[in-house]
Length: 263
Length: 287
Image 1 (cartoon, each protein chain N blue to C red):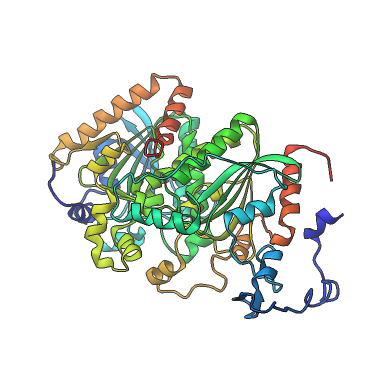
Image 2: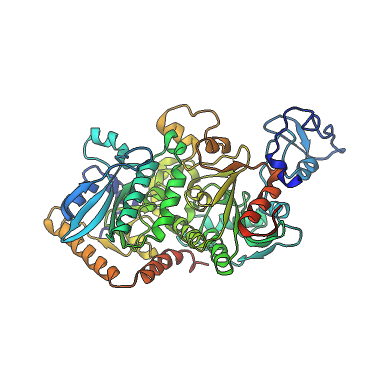
């Protein structure tokens, strides 16, 4: 696969020409119907969620959406969700659990929104609640990181049975710029930080953080979305064929394993 | 009933028992610290005697060991999982060295200390984070120790009391430290689903990945007066939004006002409050 350095991949992951959440929903699912609002405060347009068919199977789809043009990007806060976005996502996941629908998440965010209102409404609490509830949500969850996987804001939709990354997606605890400015007081060293942070799909796979990498080779062709569709169907079939307690144990152990071996 | 003292609010100086306990008087040559709130120089021994608080109410930070001796019943603390240490999972430039320096300077192996103890006679698991160790940042060892604390508590039917202080996830461990947020949350959830009690006390500062995981997952969440608690850093928010932050932004009292903590808990009454809450949830004699 790619021989690019890490920071080039970061730039690719952020580039405005990439498919966004909506493109994946259109490409993979039928009859998507969007559901709005967290029933507590507002509807966050940085996160899109709803019901749809995956072939003939009803599913719940949740996607962080950055938007395609300048206006949309402003309105969707460049895909940086507020607490109400995470709470909407959780509401839809609980609904999926009730009606035995698998949950599929598409993640693409530089991070949870950083603002006064976000703090007032408990950004930290909203993410924490998702982490807890997703760990025991009694229905299969599959997450795909399609662009940027920015820290806790991305993890809040990625506590899943299977996690995948696009070839040029990144997944990191902090942005390379943030890391460079904290560690070396110099955000221009972002490229070095990107290298150190091991944030590419290849690195994430080596660390065991993701199951597999989705190739971007035929992105313009229908095979691209069909390939993801087949992968999802296969995973859901597998996850549905094991007892749910076993599935939840596996999910717990999947995350339990990180940081056990390095000791 | 002295245990209910924390509910009692004095109406005037007299009820508070006069202005100061005694005039501040330093021994010859005793080191002093200036209180950032009232600007008085206070001898260190006086600060220590008052659980690291100033008579004006300002709460200084507290090391984990100091806090443990302050909150647990004498001689009841038994440290656990101390063999768990961070490796260097990414081979991050300079991290190994940094760890060695911090270990030598802080005399601690990691940024959290866990163990079993008794508080007010009630057996409980306890974790206390250490501000002197990379500002309590959460790497794999912190995540592992906390996870084991919850797993042990779940297995033995014990409550968990946790004191948080953290700058967030430890970036030198990259994705592995991010995963600790999910790992610890999973352990908290299992503990909660077993019907067991988890009390968090947020202390200054609790931010980032720790706020967005186990710090905010307690059945009851207390915060120390004036503690900074938030997800994103205040400076970063100011820079991104170009707005002036409201007064008291991300302080414990601000979180109370917005409904994210149950109560502010001054250290002076903290042990009796923690005892009361443990007793209410874990049986024991009524007070």
